[in-house]
Picture 1 (tube, each protein chain N blue to C red):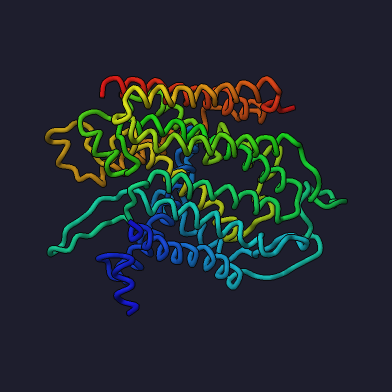
Picture 2: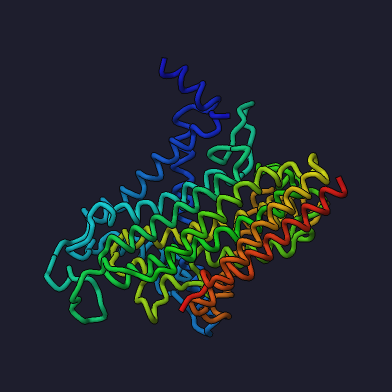
Amino acid sequence: MLSDYAPILVFLVVVLGFAVGAQVASNALGPRRPSAAKELPYESGIVPRESARRRFSVSFYVTAMLFIIFDVESIFLFPWATIVRQLKIFGIVEIAIFIGTLLVGLLYVWRKGALRWD
Amino acid sequence: MIASFWTALVGGDFWWVLVLKSAFLVLFLATAFAYLTLAERKVSARIQLRYGPNRVGPFGLLQPAADGIKLFFKENAGPSNRDRILFFVGPSLAGAAAMLAYAFIPLGTNSWFGYQFHWDITHANVGLLVILGVTSLGVYSLFLGGWSANSKYSLLGGLRSSAQLISYEMAVAFALIGAVILAGSLDLEQIVGSQQHLWFIVLQPLAFILYFIGAFAETNRLPFDLPEAETELVGGYHTEYSSMRFGLYFLGEYVNMVTVCSIATALFLGGWLPLLPFHPFDWIPGPFWFLGKVIALLFIMMWVRWTLPRLRYDRLMNFGWKVLLPLGLLNIVITGAIVAVRA
């Protein structure tokens, strides 16, 4: 079983080698003519006045939190999906309760306005 | 000692077979990426009644090579106040994660002189789950790349794309579960095998549509290309990237397209199974069927790009959370109920 994943290590090394190699090669092959203007972040021709590392909309945090919750639940669905046939009616009642709870949760965050973007 | 440890770990394959196979797959994906860019430009041009690239080589067939050479010989510039390490990690991860996912796509086997040769890098009994996990690593590359550049356009693009990718990731996962229920397995080879008689698109039309819509969002393509909406964000998360670093993001995007189309083919369109299960259709070898179906889906992705306008960001998020997600859950319950009752 574990042996199924060992070739991935080899492939990972080759793939990372390709990704890093491509950047190193373009670094070596390309010219290097730095100038003050070139090293400024692009802001449509305006000289940037402050750092880009500043606060951003709270909606992104909310989306990330909701993602964690719902994505963990999707992991529970995968093993269930492979053995629906063996579990028969018991399995379907169980998953209906589980997904029902999920949907109630979704409805709650929806009503609370967590999915609203403005 | 090392040799015996290796055989215990990897099984039959010699290490150099594995390295050659890996190198071959990387080259194959890079070539597929190069020619997809050409195909995209040609299709776009034809839809807009233009010719597209036709100067480099016959029918512009050498255009990708010229583009590649140009990318390598451009200056690798970046803002001076960037985070140097993450600025390097972003594109590396974009290229690597996209290619890594392809290791689990079943590509078929050949038997030469009693030696069983698998074209795919490895075969895992939870292959589908691993592919979903590896492709979602791509979120890090977009966000790290967007944040590290210390540019406002990049940051906004990175934020948008990470929020979009994680939102649609669930919709995609829920859509795939429909097919997993029917096959009763997460093993891609078994999923294809269980479609011998009937492709799952017939039994799971809703899941296929949900998956394919989600796939557009996962690969940042129109109508969901908000992360790099060029009219408002310049280039999105890769605004500050140039040369081959930009190339790697570009490569990641196109390889991801191939990956999502391959998953759709394996789960819904019968993988390498012929269109109709009799002569002369089954004379054509499986890999050609697989490739043909993937190319057909890729063409649809390019076609949609010039058909639908871009969504507004709040509409995009609403669509993912309030339409795709509940429909996906509904599809799981209904499919599960029918399978459980008939079992």
